[in-house]
Image (cartoon, rainbow, N blue to C red):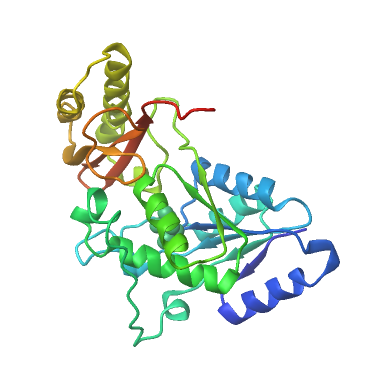
Length: 295
Ligand code: PAF
């Protein structure tokens, strides 16, 4: 079946409702929310979505560059857009519906709701992008309201976003199962991101240094039984500082669940970093720590 491309909320609702009530398509409804400029990382999320929806369910990909999650001096205008290519990617990954609304369709001119998660979203990206997570929470709740999915798939590259969305649906009792998918990487280790398109050639050559620095931290932890968090962090920071053309926004070692600074390695931790290049800010992270009993 060719993919159905929809831009209006009412048509999307009606289309999904008719699928839900048809006997052949009454299985899970899976949403993969994206901002488009789809790459292999997104393709993996969409394929994961197809596994979850099965043949009797519905797989919806949304493509919407959400203005409310960009600050006034951020890259909203420079954010890459490629709807025709995105449609082809969605179709080749067997999505059923591509929902690509305009900003005017999504937001009434006098929209006035604010959804603010006040704990997990404060540090890391939240510290340098103050309105970002409120904008993400708002658009994710709107997409959930429109699509009414049973499952939604998000990438682990945006580790903090995934944690905030899990908290959002827990605290608002939203009946959606959130599925986290592993980060997909280029051969040289760089995490796939739509923003990689905005790197200069030299920056592109240097950017895999982010992954290398994070891996060096994890390897140091594996080699050093009584490693102190501060020592690990200094090692990763010094490696990140060597990335040509990059400037550290933050690099932090946090508890994998609370996202509070980690005091030791008795619980799973994450080292997360954000690096500015001339026209792009890239994020990445690495998880490690004790394996929970039974895994
Ligand atoms: O991760 C993204 O691409 C966006 O933050 C999301 C979840 C699609 C909301 O706009």
